[in-house]
Length: 117
Image (cartoon, rainbow, N blue to C red; front, side):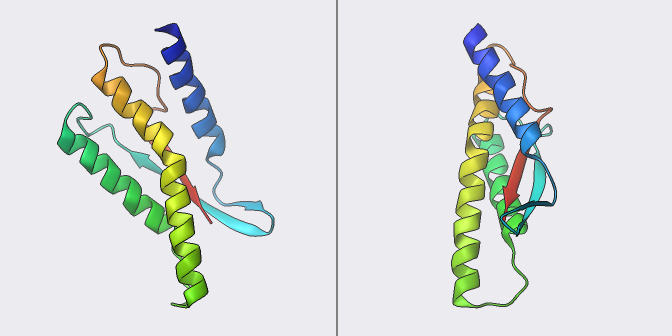
């Protein structure tokens, strides 16, 4: 039980450290946002589906490129969106597991950090 709690706390700390909007890495602008889920019942399938939908929408928003519909931009967008969702998934899974367990472990204030380029 202590190890699970420590893992959840570690994820929360890493998620908090990952939120820097905008940040520069290799001359690429990184956008970020937070996905709130305090209002969702993550013990239900409907709540889990709603959180996944919010994460997908947030990934789309942080990865959107207004430079026009070129093939390169489309490929970059798809890659960015998939990476953003993959990076948010451990936080999402920890939040769902915590909600469905007998004890609520420390999470990042019911927020999932998302970023994309």
